[in-house]
Length: 180
Image 1 (cartoon, helix red, strand yellow):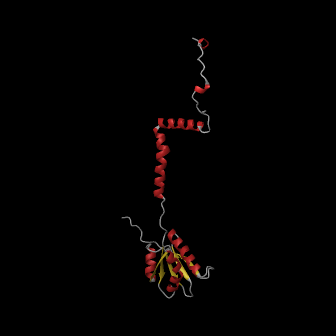
Image 2 (cartoon, rainbow, N blue to C red):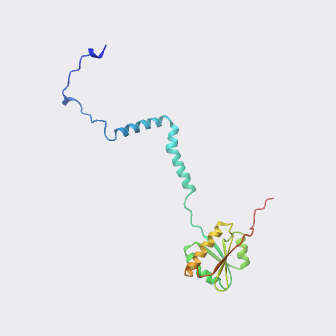
Image 3 (cartoon, rainbow, N blue to C red):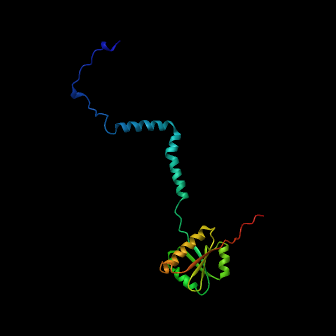
């Protein structure tokens, strides 16, 4: 039977036809695309893992690995002597911030504990008001402690590098690991 032989349907007045808004609105194409992509995703469950679960696990793992840590505290030993009180006065501002922790020790104890890694820097007061820093260039915390203490001391002395300081690298072997 061909289509020409069909009898036409009786015409219905336009008032009785249900009115359907046109489907070619602003979001119609987007909705259709989203429906198609969602159906494709449900057909392949591994895509759900890589799209939703893996990024959450990655964010959680990186959040744990790179969480905020408290600020590093520089441990400084000041050699006891006539200029030790002056050095402590200059470092008072840093002591209040909590960035430097100082201890006044005899020279032998200060150098021994520096060698063992108990202190990051040894400050030796010099005659005439200057300071000498003993630090280990192989230890990053020692280099940072030297920079932080020097900045604090120079700021307390007027910040024009008015206080004569000297630095001496001290790379003495510490108490190493013995392999038996």
